[in-house]
Amino acid sequence: MKATHILGIESSCDDTAAAVVRDRLLLSNIIAGQEVHRQYGGVVPELASRAHQQHIVPVVDRALKEAGIGRGDIDAVAFTRGPGLLGSLLVGTSFAKGFSAALGIPLIEVNHLQAHILAHFILREGEREHSPAFPFICLLVSGGHTQLVLVKDYLRMEIMGQTIDDAAGEAFDKCAKLLDLPYPGGPHLDRLASAGDPLKFKFSRPRLEGFDYSFSGLKTSFLYFIRDRSSENPAFIGENRADLAASLQKTIIDILLNKLRRAAQKTGIRQIALAGGVSANSGLREALRNEANRHRWEVFIPDMTYTTDNAAMIAINGYYSYLEERFAPDDISPMARMYF
Ligand code: KG4
Ligand code: ZN
Image (cartoon, rainbow, N blue to C red; front, side):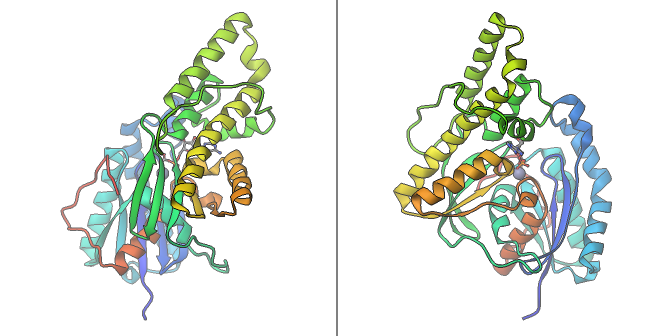
């Protein structure tokens, strides 16, 4: 059978990315980040879409060049339709539509969250096969989402539970800000936590039935705790920064893994995967490995390259959609909110 080349485009937030796969094999994976948001302490949507417009053409050119192929070799173009920032999504969507129309090749819409999960099926040159078997449970943790997903097949997924307020990444970022760490605070808090005592401080944990998550109570409890202690001792944060980070990180991880454990027990599934930006967290990765030993799970932890936003995951998702001939109409528009 002839190999299939898919070009993937990702522009849902503040990274402009393009990647090419030949069937499951990754040929190139290019990302242009946007430093402009750092000074504002968060992503500014208007600036993001403008930067995407500047980056998209050179990023796609590089992806094709590194893949060693020409435009004419591409069989279909896959793009992130949502969820994400509408102005950002619009840039990738318009580009993909133009590319598909100009070359007369199919257009494939991709759900960004589903793509984070399918990143587990990307193959790299010389790498041995190590992907989850269906059905598996994926803990999807990012800056905008926190979900427990039952993955029945490449394109058939069901949400078992999700956050009813803040996402885990948001909890990391908002609490990191209270510790005066730069944005996005998750990776900084992770580094700081490795030098701290995770049992030093206790913060409130949600009592929610079922598999849903909640992180807004934890954020508030962290805020009040810091405020009260700082009013007694103005140097409190400075003197306890690493312990605060470690204790907070442990609380977030415990909350995440509690529900995951219950979901695994209820379904009897032992194939467990992690996905999304927060899956880069070293404490979470280690805790999941320990949990796997305890419960005889087989766990799949993404390579660091695929934890945060990238287009390789969009291209691989595009490949599976291509096999099922799931093509998008040429008048398709992006969606800020999107479900499986
Ligand atoms: O998946 P992602 O790149 O973008 C979204 O789709 O949201 O996730 C970004 C989130 C941010 O909240 C960031 O702080 C968090 O992932 N993150 C981390 C770490 N690396 C990234 N959180 C905790 N520890 C990390 N090492
Ligand atoms: Zn993401």
